Image 1 (cartoon, rainbow, N blue to C red):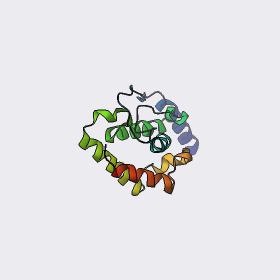
Image 2 (cartoon, one colour; image 1 turned 135 degrees about the vertical axis):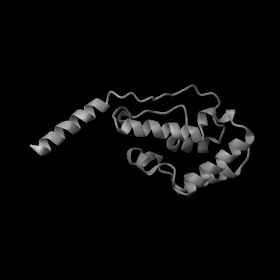
Image 3 (cartoon, rainbow, N blue to C red; image 1 turned 180 degrees about the vertical axis):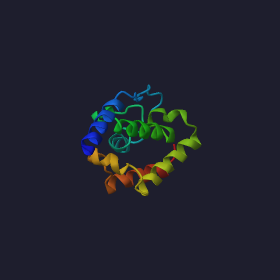
Image 4 (spheres, one colour; image 1 turned 90 degrees about the vertical axis):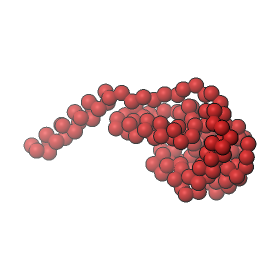
Length: 140
């Protein structure tokens, strides 16, 4: 009886939390990053789902509590740097962001390990990492 009550309470809680709204937006692109085509391809495959205004919101972003994590991660990512608003950054900020992107990749912080579970195509190859490194060392 005790376990049955716990299960019922959990199911009811899971249903109720589905009604808590989560903001999932894609504001207009105001100034996209200008990078070589090969680098852009890597960014679009591995980074744009969080670091841009062109997020493809997957089915699981509609299911709480996972939706909360996805929305949080996208908002945090956009706060760090947003490829869709790149031209709004001054030259120093753009260069700092380039360096930060490489540091995050080099230290294996990006892409996030749990993002890769559902998006294995976003895993960076050694070649991808080398392209990002060379791009990050350049200047605009």
